[in-house]
Length: 153
View (cartoon, rainbow, N blue to C red):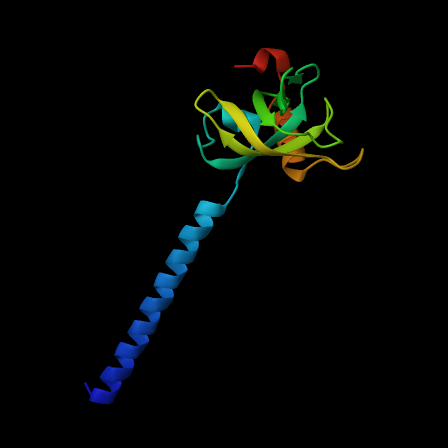
């Protein structure tokens, strides 16, 4: 092989290796920072990772909101019409938070399948529902609904 051709080949291979390394590092960084959405059914089935930041959402179950007497801790249940997940949040809930409305929470699932939220987002008007929650409710409805109270695990 001609020396100039050999030098160009090494330069091209070095550049391709550098690009591959950069892409790999970028994908690893994105994988660690992505917050996937999980429905209560997926959480109940064990599909959601434990102790990793995720998003969970659904409709707040009527009568499930309980507030601690000596702090800002709130615990409530969320359903997709099929299963129920308990969410615990310490802080001030959004003004639009109500029972029977859709929410999305950001946080971590603990070993007891209780979702410890660091942030709770509520819908912003009467007609809006977060797309993930709407899809989860529709999917649960199409899979054959069951009584929400009996779905608790």
